[in-house]
Amino acid sequence: TQLLEQSPQFLSIQEGENLTVYCNSSSVFSSLQWYRQEPGEGPVLLVTVVTGGEVKKLKRLTFQFGDARKDSSLHITAAQTGDTGLYLCAGPPGTYKYIFGTGTRLKVLA
Amino acid sequence: DAGVIQSPRHEVTEMGQEVTLRCKPISGHDYLFWYRQTMMRGLELLIYFNNNVPIDDSGMPEDRFSAKMPNASFSTLKIQPSEPRDSAVYFCASSPIDRASTYEQYFGPGTRLTVT
Image 1 (cartoon, each protein chain N blue to C red):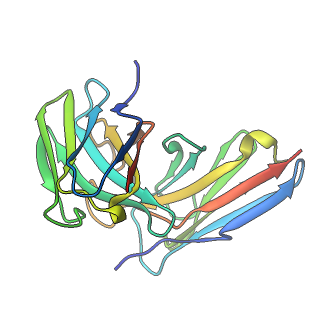
Image 2: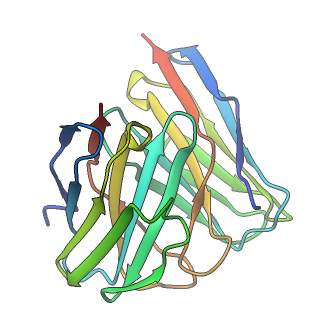
């Protein structure tokens, strides 16, 4: 069974701090996605990475896909309270079907 | 576009009752997905459709669960009979046709189901 393990599970930091969350698997994925989910809402897609070693930036968020395409990281610079939420990675074990990671619940304190 | 629409947003029912969850995908999207989210198991794919045809229902937990997509703008997920362990948030998501072997899923706001 292909699994996507995320770490840490929970993270509470002060506004302005930097943080990195990780998404790891023992399997190779053709692509990985990152979503953010806020309470009472559905996940919202942030980014898709498809090439090993790829780095994508979205304002203060930096996403990296591992060279071997088994892992990914999300780095947030100078976190803001608006970054609070559940961060999920997702990857396709097959065609047209994604599995989701275990999630990292981030809380940014003012 | 209004996005993916789900109804009801909250449902409380008694064990043994039939529950029907509804979803209207984004117009023009070819794929529709039903997910279930719990604290213990996270976000799990139940079933997905392509052009109204069920493609993979291997995530449907048991025969009490069924899903239909009678047309491109409507889908239902039915649980009959419901059990307390079915309590979860159920999400519907839709996606445009695959591009470069990846696709973007747009999620609805979810239906929070409580079975007592």
